[in-house]
Length: 228
Image (cartoon, rainbow, N blue to C red; front, side, top):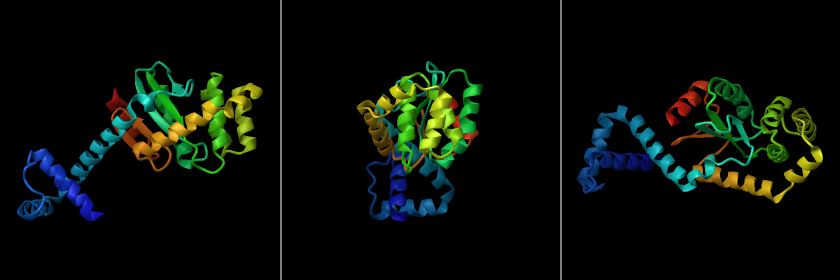
């Protein structure tokens, strides 16, 4: 792992320096190693640049698909000019922790659109995700989303409670939740997450940035501001 990272960083040095013709073996590599050892403070910047490059490559693979929501599965302003994508799971403690930050972002930015990608990776979460997309089909997604996180970990009882709070037509919701359309959306979100290199929830996309975890309000706001 260490050698792989060093090789990648050396390659990045050559790329920045325009030294593509200089071999990575022999004297060239030895001198570069020596220079890196003498200047270790540059390594974090290089690693960040390398990760940004890789994130850009992964985003290019998914194109605009990641920012195109399942109809209705949007928080904030559906027509907003700034977009934040959130991959989420109602059974995820860190997703729940991030909710105050998400709502604070929405309250402070009338042009913010949050595209929510339901990605149920925890046991028992899939039915909650399906009901959320059924709520989106009824134009009740934000109400269900907030109620589901407030209700606690997904279970038949908490899902039913959130659906009631959101005012869903349950016959219609149950049909949509079990539909091929919803199944396809969950599969699409899983594939998007895999392509983007996500390993868990919450995960985020803002412009050309791809990041994971409960990163806090300031980091989310900065990502949205950078995207704008």
